[in-house]
Amino acid sequence: MRIVLLHSDWIEFTPKRKAIPKPEPVEKETKRIEEVLVALVTVEKGDNEEVVENAVKDLLDIKNRVKAPRVVIYPWAHLSHNLADPSLALKLLTLFENKVREEGIEVYRAPFGWYKEFRIAVKGHPLAELSREFKPGKGKEIKKKGEKKFVILTPQGAEIDPVTADLSQYNEDFQILVRKEALKEPLPGGESKVIYYLQRFGFDWEPYSDYGHMRFAPHAALIYDLVAEYSRIVARKLGLPVYEVKGTPFFNLSEKPVKEHAELYGDRLYIVETDKGEFVLRYAACHQQFSMMKDWVISYKNLPFGAFEIADSYRYEQSGETELSFRLRRFWMPDMHIIVKDEADAKEWVLKVHKLILAEMEKLGRNYELLVNIVSPQQYERYKDFIINLAKDVNKPVLVSIYPPTGLNYYWTINIEYVIRDHLDRPREIGTVQIDIGNAKRFGIKYVDRDNKEKYPVILHTAIIGSIERYIFAQFDTAVSKKYPMLPVWLSPVQVRLIPIRKDFLEFAEKVSMELEKEGFRVDIDDTERSLDRKIVDAEKEWIPYVVVIGKREMESGELTVRIREERDQRKIKLEELIKILKEKTEGYPKRTIYFSKYLSKRPKIMKME
Image (cartoon, rainbow, N blue to C red):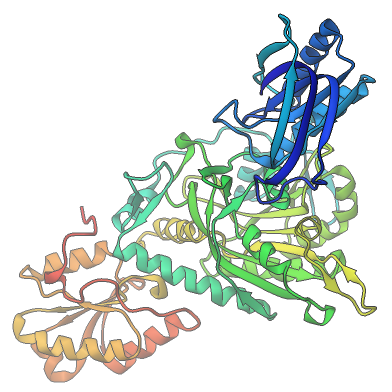
């Protein structure tokens, strides 16, 4: 905070026109104050209450020394290029004014956010013109009344202290979750095979970008788009109307609801300076969907409904903690918000979402452990029976994290994290669902009830399959845990590879490929001048589910020799039967054509085949 103090005979100012889009409301009249200490104040980034307190102490000292009977606080944005965003500046200027007034001093504040015409008569003595600069120290931290408390809650309703619990009675996945979250034990970790295979398939960091930003080569881009489309399919499985939207990742921190939501979210905000001021890059689809829904006319007859967006999301993770496809600074969240009438309806829909989250991970042959975050001890008592029902549903204990009462107005009451145990025995959060009781009011989202009264709905936040990248991480983690790794057939970039033994059989291979493509399957042809063994080895490295070797016998008989990766077997089957198998394996999943040349001989070396 920078201040110029002017002991003056008088100051006179008149608001003329707006300096920011939403200035402080004001009467456009001239104000004159006589015998006054004028403080021209610039609020800078990083300023806080501590800075204001120090500035007030200094101002009071000067006021007493020059014997000025009154004070004017005059917003003055010209003392620094490091300006705070307008909402923070106004907040701290108002605090400055109030703290001076609390000392029993007559104080005035010129309106904020206006270009003003002003005149001033400064007295001519040594203390009449002074400049000051105040920098924040550590600032004021919210003092927590204790730390988070962890409880193991059983389906029978028993509460067990993780510190004294006999963890050996629980499954290994749950033990690892408790040790990591509740007991804060370091886990062994190690070198991840997942990262190696992700890079082989074309998922990697972008070296020309910031830390934590990925790039997707053709195979990776295809996998990404398939998962994104599948997230839409999953969102509609809940059986309610889903309204898909699209929007911007940039939101103005001078807007009150955006600022408040950002403050509640906490750290890891990705801030960008623009010519309109300070903007936050969204960390989920909340801002865009809430900004839209506040303009919708919603009746109780429309509830419940879902709003959905595959939102590019940004979190300023520490550079040393970023991890390919799991912990990123920029990622994609298939984010759905379910709008319901009240908290009772919210609990019913959480259970429906919960069952769908579990079912989607079960398709990978995996199980989730539950970490249930509760915003306060009071809310824990309110939600305890609900959490016990969750434990009963999964038929095993859940770990509950109870936040201390800090005085913060969190927007959620309960936040359920769905955690898998990865191949390195680390807990990994994938899916999530929350009950939000604060943002409808914060953003002005309303509905009209049966009595024609406006009410604020309750909002569920959920990413059923997790972020796109984390779901892909889970798929690869599942694959590398098998003796013969492979992705599901629907997600495999190439579902069928045709290998003609000689060029003589290329035309027949092309006919087979066209029949498969008609049915929407992804097929390529290894027409390179290499040995059959080398071609088969490379197909194995790409985890291709079905490899068809084509020679004279296949062309004459119409029976294909098919290597089936999942079965580690080779069979002779008709093309019609192969199509039937592919349809069964991909039913209910999205289809896309290949993103690269069908002919291997025409491709640049993109995949890392070493």
